[in-house]
Image (tube, rainbow, N blue to C red; front, side, top):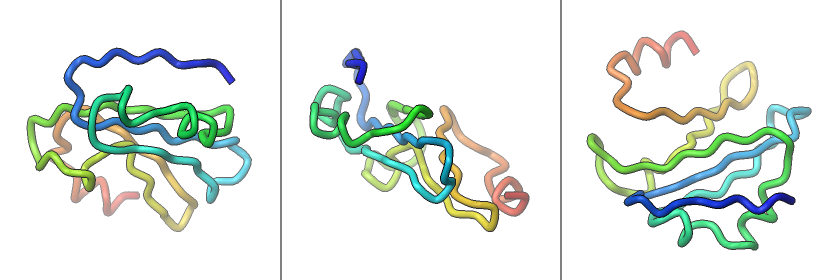
Amino acid sequence: MKRLCFSDRGQESAGIVTSKGEDTKKFNMHKGMGLVSHVFDDNAMQKLKGNLGLGHTRYSTTAASEALNCQPFVVHTQHGALAVAHNGELVNAESLRKKV
């Protein structure tokens, strides 16, 4: 596995979700509060298997600084699981939720 390099530029939380892309019900995820270098160690990185991945670092401008808001988010829909990360505030979150 390639070793990923991250900067520590003031993040409050970080997360990565990976998948092999074959099974939309199977995601590998690790996320937590703190700087990237504190959230991810070698053990955590080895568990993130797959050829697809989505990562996110967060420094909040809205919502509380707590584990509940760590991204990426994984949601389960009638069409399978979906991993989402965004940077900013989704002002139309309710209408997007209804569409998904």
